[in-house]
Image 1 (cartoon, rainbow, N blue to C red):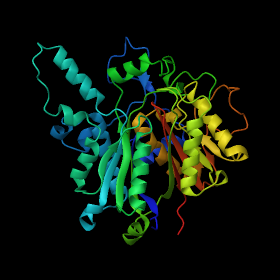
Image 2: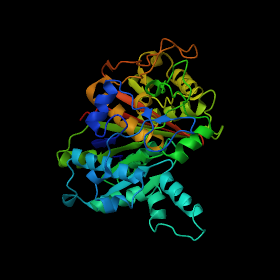
Image 3: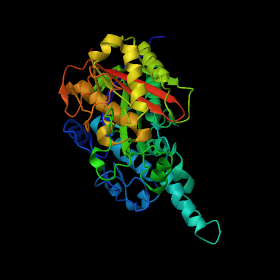
Image 4: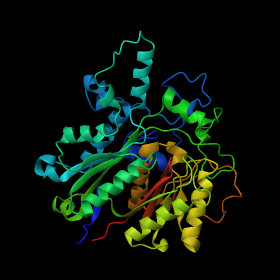
Length: 417
């Protein structure tokens, strides 16, 4: 069976450093930090008092107030970024076969705020079970592709993927496979997350996973820096529309890049800690390269998982050096989480957009907040510290790793006829 080629024809982003793709990209290139004191709830008694929250997002710009009240924030975010991607891709679904257009979405946690609020209301009452009739539909992760399909009348493959922080990368890999196997023409894919609330921040604090640099939030996300002390929580959504090449060409679509490979693996090591030698990370990148039919010398940029945790940054870098060998010193590495924070299940989609735009524009977004070298990292590697760098980008690899040992990587390259 001849596999179909799959290209990217629409992008949408709702992030802590920009509520549209152009704003997001501008924020990345200018090294903008999205971290600031949390405004959405009282953080007085919390160990971490800051996060990368969205700025000036109003769901009523995308839906009426009554509809917004029926949706958890992670669903609102997904609808917003998807609306941008559909417009960006110039899609008129009335002119297309919607039986072959699907939605595959990723989220690590889903409606945690809805769950928290409903439980708070129940336990503060007299025990009478008075629950919002939208309680369950608001919190389940698969409701996002459901809402998107209903909004646009799309009847193709429709489901959600859950693999913690690798969730939206797994969604993209599934989207790629469905199209290249000729089971769909177009798939709207991506991920969204909304965990900046008492339960989300409190839960990650209990794990000692978050930075507690409350005196200087803007510089708290410090991937590969000697003084990194945990990740910074982020929220938002990223949408990528994948399309079969001939289908895209027939309707005159603009093409950002081509997706050429995806890899998956498991650490089989620990529920939250990475494999100390980065074996799962090395395997997932190897699998992605093999799927793409590329060698390490073909990759010019890796958007790393790079969360700013003491263990994770070391194991991922070790995996890159072990796999790429001498080619590791010829590529650019950067962690855009230094600016956006960690969007958990949405991270893969948002960071894939950064990789796609790096290919399109031949610019590598930086890893900001680097102040002190860590001897655990090879100083000869190019981590793109503090400033964007211009260079030809033929192909880019994007890594995501999730609690439970889930690893997923995707590879994009410049589109050529």
